Structure formats: C-alpha cells, structure tokens
Image 1 (cartoon, rainbow, N blue to C red):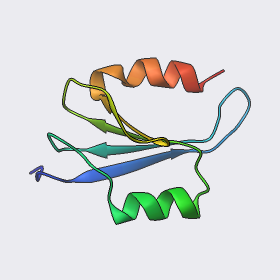
Image 2: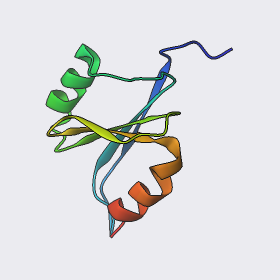
Image 3: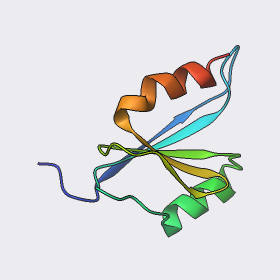
Image 4: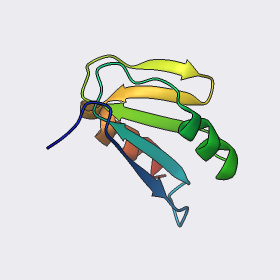
Length: 82
C-alpha cells in the first residue's frame, strides 16, 4: 500500500563522470519543503535537491530545491552524469 505523502530518498555518491546528487521521491500531488529536506541539504552539504513526484509540472521551491515529474527523471540523470 502506498500512502499519500510517502517518500524515499536516493543519494548518488560522486564518482567518475557523476556528480553528487540527491533525489527525494514523493507520492504527493504538490510536494513542498519539509524540515527533513532542509536538514538533509544542510547535513549533506547539498548544492541542489530534486523532488520527483507523479505530477506533470516542474517548479522551484527554492533556489536549491526543484520539483519535477517522474517522467523527467531520465533527462535529469543524463544532466547529472557528465
């Protein structure tokens, strides 16, 4: 069973041709910034965090937090792998 508001995080460790990245996957119609997200950004010293959700619109929650549809995930991964 998937509950509204459930989430899972993916943190990619930097390596050859891959930059450190964190994706927060949300099962929510309109994800927002949470205390846990702000703590993760601070603790992991992230320059940016992406929230992936099942919606259709991309938008920014802050300068360093973006929301994007799950359908855009392949494009984001291609940008992160250099």
